[in-house]
Image 1 (cartoon, rainbow, N blue to C red):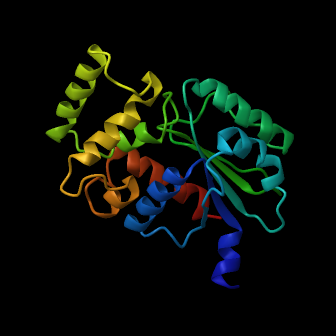
Image 2: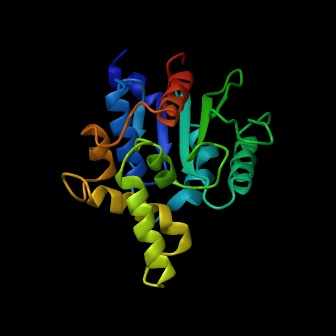
Image 3: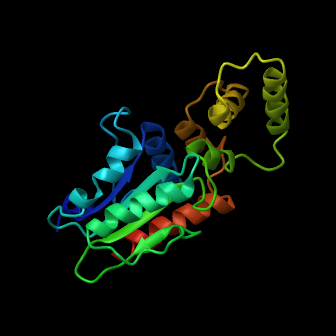
Length: 216
């Protein structure tokens, strides 16, 4: 069977283009790109709700063996999980746990495609891709506290233009702006070893991908 045909049977859907490039870079660093097709979002405007709404239809695609979904938990991780559970229940996946799996959900139902769910950043805290990326910065990085201090000072003076929910995004992009090559996109920063690819959270994500796709 052709490689393209095999990959089309294993798909990973992501919420946005930044997610696409971050995951693509991590897969490259861990030699995983041949496991599945990583679908680039057609439009940033569709958002997570449209992706979740599409799951029952996605799971009906002929020949599909495994489908992975990566979305932000955002402010209410339980609400996000409950929405995904409801849509998967419609598709015949009615045995998902009431709480997200800490290491990412992988659901196997006889006669149906395997399904995997990862809620950014780590399946148990509210947040976004940028919170996940923050874990790719070394704990002993000297710029990390300096960026936090600058943002805190801006906020105390009321000079920040970003909202509270976007603080981590401001943090990541400020940190990247202070590197040897300022303003490098997140995916490229992983490829260039500026961000770590093998920390605990990154490895947990890679293990989830392997559990979902390797044995399929």
